[in-house]
Length: 431
Image (cartoon, rainbow, N blue to C red; front, side):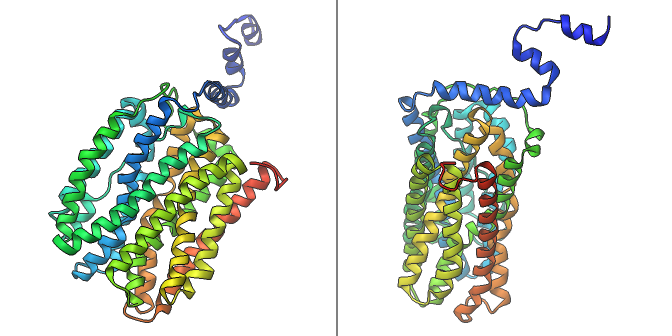
């Protein structure tokens, strides 16, 4: 019997299986999209999903908010004489870089342990890392080792039509956390010093974050067992979105890490610097929430393009001319909102374009590409600042760092526009 005859008389249990035998590469992708559509069609659009959203929002409050408050601690440690801004910015960048570097590992951990246990692990590591950092505030190497393993989970399974809003609420928790933590951290540093600021925040993180982790519950198990879906790299849309993340993450941490130093160069107090970081983070929270709503109304790719456009404008047009408090506040509001919008929109883009059933793997692959931007973006800005005179020089010394960050945002914006037109050339259409 010929091979062709064997194929024609073999009767698989389902039509999908038959198609898989003939076209494995195509149907593997189609099956996941079909399963995603089926899961999305039964999404409750709320109910216990809102509890999951609230729990994830609270965990984001600590995990993202702590990292986005690093600029306050960086300024305090610099004033203490521990090291230069470029070196200290590596410490804060390392936290976000670990999120990206461990993204694929985290996706596998979520599948093995489940979302709840993964959240327990992430919160525990963050709290313990902060407590240990409290004993190493005069040792740069120790801070590198203790400030940086976090795990992120999202409640996409519970929502379809309101997925953008759900992701926006979760991400908004990080912006709100950055506001509260930066102000609290500055107050504790002023009274007790950086060491106790680390310890107190670590203890509070454990006391409040672990109960939130207990509330997380998956609606259905993540079926994908693939660590990396290499076929996605044959998809133009995926490759472009992947590269957008690689480039767009370089400027994201520059403002929150360097605003306290920049405000000090303007002659403002450390409290004013902490207030500006708090303003950046609350703007980020508003931007995350509004971008979630905009993604549902305008489309995630359109929303992502708008956010990167605002980032570019704020870096090129507003920050370089912020020689007093008023324009600096305008920059903080605009850039913070656009910054937060990036994080709120990307998960919705991935879930909408590639299917909710593969969010874990696809997001893991995309976020892994953010390592370089997270790790090197702020330090490169720090080295540029030092090369052009340092924080004790004129405000013009900051301009190369600003233009570097703005250029990266501009390139990422152009790539989003390219994939947006590839999907649909009608610019008025929701995409």
